[in-house]
Amino acid sequence: MNYFAKLIRCHRKQSNLTQVQLADLAGVGKTVVFDIEHGKETVQFESFQKVCSVLNIHIKLESPLMEYCVKEVSNEKG
Image 1 (tube, helix red, strand yellow):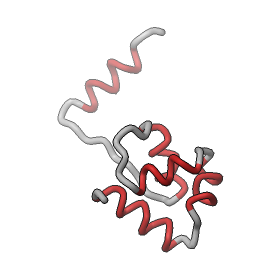
Image 2 (tube, rainbow, N blue to C red):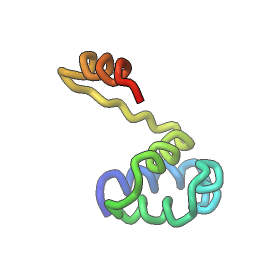
Image 3 (cartoon, rainbow, N blue to C red):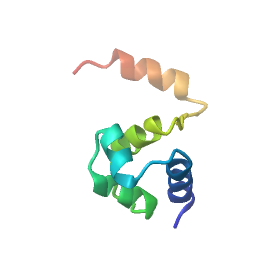
Image 4 (cartoon, rainbow, N blue to C red):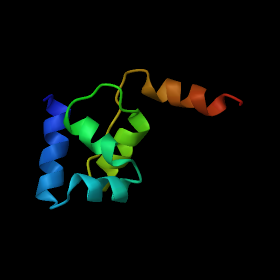
């Protein structure tokens, strides 16, 4: 089990949630929570974010280029 899998599982258990309850609260399938907790690498990032949000885990992206790239992405059309 990888680091993120262990963290998610610990947070879920400390929140007294089953995998099914967490999945329902996050609006994802129950297999998503199972897959995350077993370190499956094919879980979509959006689904991972939803699960983290329910557990009050905040994901922060940092980079020396972040400010520049955020502006570039905001200015893109389509």
